[in-house]
Amino acid sequence: MMYRTSKIKEIYDRNWDSLYRLCLIYMQNQEDACDMVQETFVRLLQYIGRQEEKTEVFRDEDHERAWLRTVACNLCKNELRHWWRRKRQEVEAIENLFEPGQAVQEHGEILEDILEMPEKYRVLIYLHYYEGYSVEEIGNILKEKPSTLRSRISKGRKLLEKKLKEDGYGKEN
Image 1: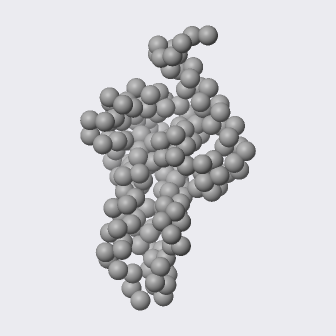
Image 2: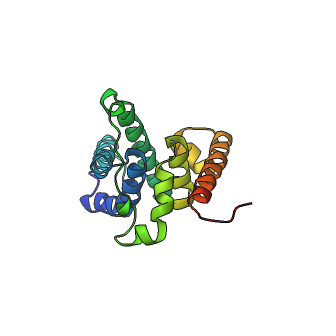
Image 3: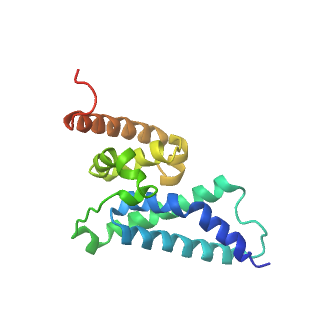
């Protein structure tokens, strides 16, 4: 039985925005983030093609979200490891992480600081605080131990706190 086109469109509509933001956190540029999201959905179509006899490919929406985020994270990591990518540094404005007009007023300066953090902290902070994933869920997505991720989140939070204090946010101790 062929998976219905309307079902695939529902999955796309439900997940595109958050996948784009996740890929943008990794790739730090709109075009590459869009490419990674597109490639994630190509992988979804390939996966569904291999699962044709099943009426439902995913157990539930949480399983679907986790699968898509795992694929997107892996694609971004692979792309960032590519030799050409290592030769180039690009940082673009972050206004498109959220709805138009919302980013700069509500999240802009903090997100700029997050984007300047090393990748191992940047991605964790984003997934945990902006996407609302638990450390265990992030561990499943990134294939890392939750204890390791807790340490990184803690260190990332401290780095971010220090940066925010330097920028004049919060009170000095």
